[in-house]
Image (cartoon, rainbow, N blue to C red):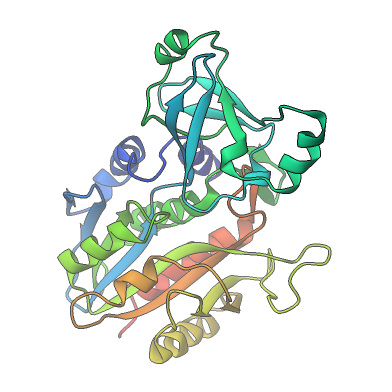
Length: 334
């Protein structure tokens, strides 16, 4: 299990450049599916045939990242953010481009007083990437304007918990891969979507859901776990306390009947669960529920500390319970 998560999280695949990850996922699941397609936007849709309701499971394949916007004469790179990144998490971080080039990020200061001023009012305008180039020409031999990078964050096995970059949402991709391998002769007609460009507007899920047009959709994503010193008092999702059944975030209010049914499935199968009401953020579920005339949609969330950082941390029991949950949903009478 951990080897699959390590494999997926270490792939560099920011929004709009998910091809390597999509192909890796396809190779993992190909022996276990009846059919697949990669749609024009790049999302992978796989099919396990059954006679019941048409159910779509979704996990997004992309991750947050950086895009080079300009190369200065001295070889330093200016960049733009891909997805929601706090600039303070970037200082002194190593990044890796899809071609393997490494760099580090730091902030500029022309005068002594700028050191504290720019740090206090930090924005991407004050940041740059150093790839070890001495000139614009040397830098261009390494990267080009439009090239993308992500965190250089290794996989850390802490026993019952693991840490890596891109747990959002590779842990959900791993969940669906494992479920696909385990589900035999499903009662329902199952589609598994590995959607692109979630981090920049829930884009891939929208087109994939339109393509599949399911009776029911379940998005799988991470959710912030603030079970840390002085974590958000209004958000009680915690690592190791079970799968989070989403009730609300900024992108959707989950279908009431779907929430009730998910709760019933969890209780009937002794799957630990907690409820999630998130006052910010969103998931592919928000886009899926608006497809065509509307789709009944729910979301299962895997608690994760330090979301949108190179040190995203999850509990293995939450991961295993989510796989089990997906299996039970797939064979439930809806």
